[in-house]
Structures are given as structure tokens and as C-alpha cells.
Length: 305
Length: 258
Image (cartoon, rainbow over all chains, first blue to last red; front, side, top):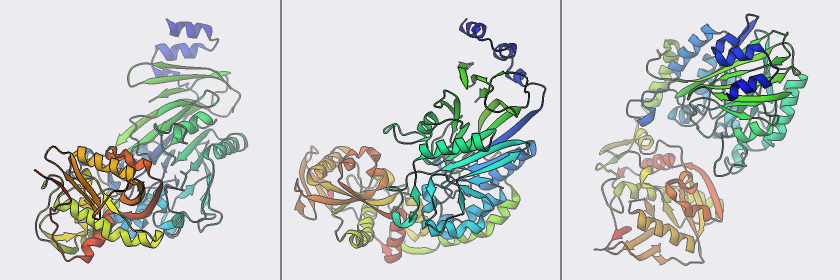
């Protein structure tokens, strides 16, 4: 059996043998184990009410009030939870047309979102339209590759934010899509788009080496992958070209992934990429289990998706 | 540093990745296991009453606005009434022409030559009686916006060819097409004039079709694109607001002569 061969060749440890032959949970050592839960949405597009019964494949799905109670029960299960959004909060129902995003931000604040990044549709009322709604948001925005320094958003968007949950240091940085051609210049004004790969290399160095984060998450509105234009920057292209990123939470392409996909980064390490379609029909949940067992020199990470 | 990386597929749903990794990165915590899942937000999840109560005044206000009457429709119009052109499709294409042209003119000092939308983009009927903002949302729930693509005459002929073989009542305005009883092209004109292969035409459509939706690949051959940032839905709302009575007709713009 190939698996046996692999294990024989590897001087790894007996723990791994038990992992592959027995149950997966048996790998978790009895030492200090800490769970971080990441909940995420993307492209909710002002879908505040649930869909009605005559809405095709969306029928009876979604709705902020339901999402709120689900989030609450998950937070009760694990208080060490982060709730993130990958952009395009705005535009898609009359709520946006009537209130300009006020209700979206107020509700996300009530749901205790921790962080969001900025999607192209979040510029739909111009950069001033976004700025105007900021007082309604009790959560912060991150974008590492939008340079807002010459706009009203200056100092209101950070490149990254670091959370400490139960001793685990989590670095989250944001990435936005090229605005030229997608959003009118008069809307994004002097916002400067910078190369996501170059910026991510800086971010991963800062978060891994300088900040010593245990977990690095990229909150991206680049789009999952462009089949017709495979070299176009996307979450998949980004994952392959960078290092140290553990998870990319995506948006923009409204890609309905049933489970996160696994890509290899430039060092051959695993990167998880997830995206949950759009309109608040689904929420992604990714649990990271850490242990502080220092004795072993060789380590493994089990990915269960 | 990663030495080995091994992925086993345990079954269709469980993918197990083992990363054997020399412990050179950090020595505080080790990432041991990752579990990912997708949670569906459905009617089995109880609504949070606090959130619901908070939303209620907004919901009432929006609904009140959505139900405010903009115009009156003298009949019920469906995209299924008509073979190669429909009253409701003509209404939508004409509305795009009328409402978007002034915006396009102010941006470019040029005029829209004709409009092409898609039959599938008419998402509901327009019922007889009051026409409201909600009607516009029902006709066009999508966020598609008007774009104007500059197409060379020779490419416009591909567009006509597409319509000839699609045999669907894709809404048009400013363009007229006559087919014979065998669906062979008799005549295609833009504002009464025959299409010139070398002339450039400003074709208004929506961003979905421009990007190849409904296999309208000819739009990719456009030289210039103008994004008007004007949603089709808002075109309809503006059109309904300016016209008290909605009385669209099936006409001669796209016909088969038997």
C-alpha cells in the first residue's frame, strides 16, 4: 500500500500512523488545544430580507435575522470566533437605494462583525457614499492594496488588523479588485489600486515575521478564479504565488463553493480558499485547532473539508 | 519549511491533507487541524426577534415606497406575447434608448444608434393597472447597467445574423430586421438606413450581454466601451415616472414576412 510506504519512508512519528488508520480526532493531543472559528460572508448585496417562496434556487433562503441567530448560537459554542465579510455589502435590493447602506452597516454591527474588506459595489454611491455610512459601522475595514491616502477614506481603512483570541494571534489583511474598468473613476476618485501579489508578499512578511501571527487570513474581493483569463489575479492565482497565508476568504465572483478548496502556495504549503456565493444564502465556517505541544519536531496539519 | 506534503482522499467528502513540517516557523502554537463547512441560511433557522424588530420600520418604509404608483398600464404584457418582437420587450428597449441617450450624448457628444437587450432579461410580466417601483424591480431584479459598445458595421451584421438565427424576441430599438418566410434576411436597417460595413455604430446593451451573456460574442469585437453607470431598472423607473400611461405595442421592427 502506497500509504504504508509513505509512512515507512517518513521518519515522522507514530502519531501520524494513528491518524491515517484511525479516527481523525485521535490526532489532537491531550495538551492545551485551542479552537478559533472563522465565520464569513461575501457579496451579501443588501439582501436583508430572506428570499420569498417564488425565487427559484434562492427560495426561502437567506435573511439577516436568521443569520443573526445562527451566529449567536455559534458564538455560544465557541466565543473565540471572528465574523468577517469579503465585500460587496452594498447594492442589490431597494434597501440600498433608499438608505445608501446605512441599514446594512447597522445590522452588521448588531451581528458583531469584526472586519470587512471593500468590494467594487461598495463604491456604488461614490467613495463619499461609503464614507458617509462609516458612522453606522462598529466594525473596521481592511484593504492593503487600495491606497486611500488622497481620498476621504484616508485613515479609515487599515491594510490589516490583528486579533488576539484565546492567546492565538490572527492577522487579517484585505485585498480589493482593480477598479479601473469596473467602477467609474468619478466614483472611486483618487483611490489607487496596487498589485495584490506584491502587497500580499509584504503583508505575509509583516504578519508572519514581524507580528508573529499564528494564523494569517486574506479577506479578498479579487474573485475566485477566471477560467477564460487564468492569469488574471484571483484568489487561486494569489494563493499559488504567495506564502504564509492560511486562508483566503473570497468574494466578487459569487462562487458557490460547497467546501473550501485547497491550493499549494509558492512553498508547497496548503492554502484554503473559500467563498459562499452571494446574497447571504450561506455562511462559511472554518475552525482552526491549535495545540501548544512543543515536544515534537515534525508536525502535521489535518484539513477536513 | 515544508518537507513533504501528502494528500489522501478518504472518500468523496473528506479530504485529508497531511503536512509534515519542520518546526521552524513558530513555537508557541501549532496549527493541528482545520475543519471547513458551509452553513445554509434557511427557514429552519429561527429569526432573531431583536434584529427583526429593528428592521421593521425600514421594511415598512421601503415597501411603502416600492408600492408607490408611477404610471398605469392599460393591459397585461408578457414576453411570451409576440414572435420576433413583443410589446414588453419594445417598451424596455425603447426606454433604454430614450433614457440613456441623453446621458450618452452628454458624455460623448454622440448618439446611441440602437439598443439590444435579451429576451431572457425580461424577468416578469407587467400587469394591467398601477405600475410601481416594485414593478421595475420585478421586471429587472438584476443589477445590470447600460453600456454602449462601438461596433463596426461588419460586426453589426454578425449581431443581425445572431438575431436571425436566435429566433427569439430579443428586445431591440432603432434597428429593424425583416426576414422572409424561411427566416432568410431580407433587410436590416438602423434608423431607416442600410448597415455600412465600415461605419461605426453605438450600440446600447447591458453589461451582462456585453460580457458575452446569451452567447452575444460579437460585443467582444467592440473598439470602445462606455459604461453609463445607469441600471436598467433605474431606466425603467425613470421611464415609468415620465409616462403616465404605459401602452406598448408589437410593431414592425423585427418581423418575418410570410
